[in-house]
Length: 118
Ligand SMILES: Nc1nc2c(c(=O)[nH]1)N=C([C@H](O)[C@@H](O)CO)CN2
Image (tube, rainbow, N blue to C red; front, side):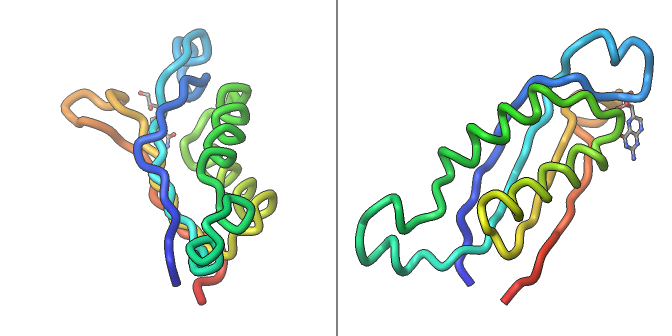
């Protein structure tokens, strides 16, 4: 199994459980690993035969910017479902972090794996 990845994709969104968090936008960061067979794209050297990380990141930015979830768990599940369904990805690992959300920690968040790994 090969992996196409996106690291430290930063997106501003409304996220959090407290009233003050509902009134501001905060940055979340995504590290996304997606299972893919890269051999066809490597052989043809054509983007149509590759999992296009640019189009995935554009879709994720649009979705996350519009979202208003409370928990990082909910955002992570929704992002995972979107990638699995819309981009035909069989398996992914997503680390979704919220920098500066916890005093004394660089970031907090969740790591999830979804789908079937071949
Ligand atoms: N498991 C979680 N714990 C907490 C979350 C969360 O999304 N998942 N969120 C918060 C607050 O919004 C925090 O990020 C701001 O202080 C607290 N705990």
